[in-house]
Length: 222
Image 1 (cartoon, helix red, strand yellow):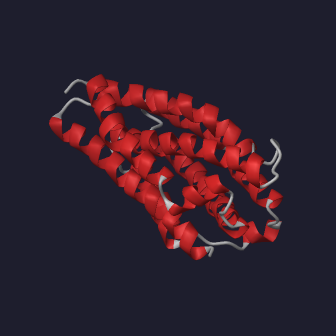
Image 2 (cartoon, rainbow, N blue to C red):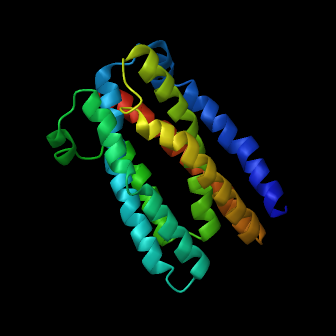
């Protein structure tokens, strides 16, 4: 299978159904209805803040690991630069929901979110580059879609301002560019059946991780 066909297949067969399952989950069903508790929304803010911090560290390590590969070094440098503000944007959302600074500094990751961050770091440090980007393509496609849900519900049901919701407006735009770049890199670099299998496997794993992450947040912040 050529690279573009592979990316199209992964989007259609893995990412698309994964997004639909996430949208059908209890977390997002209640969010759309305005019935999701503030505590569960705060839980997302705390856990995603911690995950974004982990992402920044993994991008920094990715820059070091790929210092001899100009294309990948530049990619991780750009990603690190773009992601620098994202932890604080997640925190801004949580503060608007009533959290305090110490809620973020004292928090730890729940199990499902540890798995998410661990997979991100694994892909950055040990994964084959298209495998890494397949995980990112999947994750960012899901973030882009669920940002729309948070944005609409935050305005409609929870009285949040555009300033409070900046994380989501940023990701609805930025992740479209990120996913396009990931798709292009996958299409150009995948050469063998094994590499194709790794790409599909990585996308499948990230769908499972994302679904587990929101189930975990829903349960832990009941």
